[in-house]
Amino acid sequence: FQAISDQPCKPFSKNRTGITIGEAIASVVVSSDKNRSKNAVQIIGSGSCNDANHISGPSRTGEGLYLSVKSALKEAQISEKEIDYISAHGTATNFNDEMESIAFSRLDMLDIPLNSLKGFYGHTLGASGLLETILGIESLFHNTLIASEGFEELGVSHPVNIIKENKEKDLHIFLKTASGFGGSNTAVIFKKV
Image 1 (tube, helix red, strand yellow):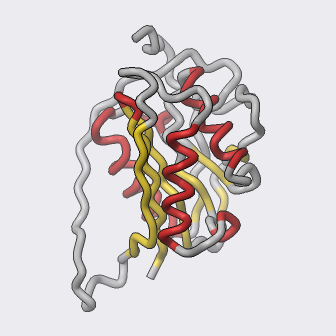
Image 2 (cartoon, rainbow, N blue to C red):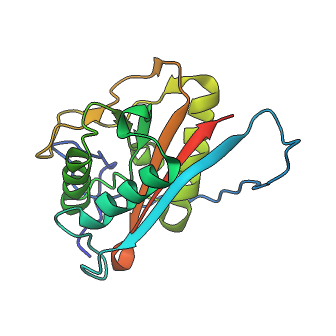
């Protein structure tokens, strides 16, 4: 796919050269039990859309991601301004990072702090969405925004608000987005309970 880099990936950076492959496994316990652990989050909204653009590349307009996030916000019955931060897919490929910046701009989410954690461990393919969800949940519980490893200078057309250093912040709600092969796009909104 000509997207593999020989350097660590640098999502949303001007000098990004593509993805590096990582390896991971992740699991979570999903429960409707009202007596759940105090360390629990609630899924308050989700949306999925397939833009059917290309077997491996997302729609250049970000349409699929845009529609997924719109659907998640509608289901959650919240506005985009209630999102405390975004855990983006951020693969460090030109097309993916650009389409995410377009989608977030169309959604009026450019001011919301955003990270991609693939600079730490690479793209773990099928495990990446769940791994980043777990890290996002931990961010909520620790009230900490995690910086995007490897980010240097913004390299997308719409100025997303990249988290450049770890910061403490009172966090309640985050948005996790993921885009994958075949044009699949997903957005899930999590709330600390």
